[in-house]
Image (cartoon, rainbow, N blue to C red):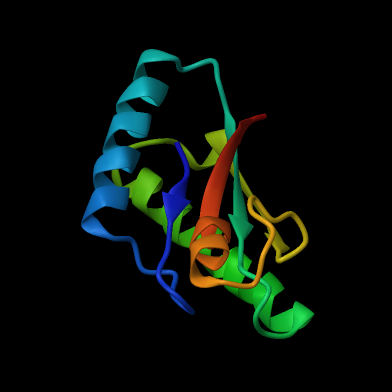
Amino acid sequence: QDIFFEFDSSTLTAKAQDILKAKAEWMVRNPHLNIIIEGHCDNRGTTEYNLALGERRAESVKRFMLDLGIADNRIRTISFGEERPLALGNDEEAWAKNRRAHFEFD
């Protein structure tokens, strides 16, 4: 389950925090698995700005997971900025889907 962000923000919502708590519990039960947190943005803003915002989003999620007791060596982050959209389009619905942190197994 992806973590979604408000426009131009890397702040975790209460809903995002609840999702991350469940992910952390899952990671505690599966200590052999590691994750990659991908930071993504909508297509507004420059490439450089969106890469930096995607990094802030991924790092925000990582810090929260670390605070929940997940070891640093189990989490990597990467930013894709606007380069890998979940939804195509130039409207609020598409933009909202693209402002996210996505999880992959490492």
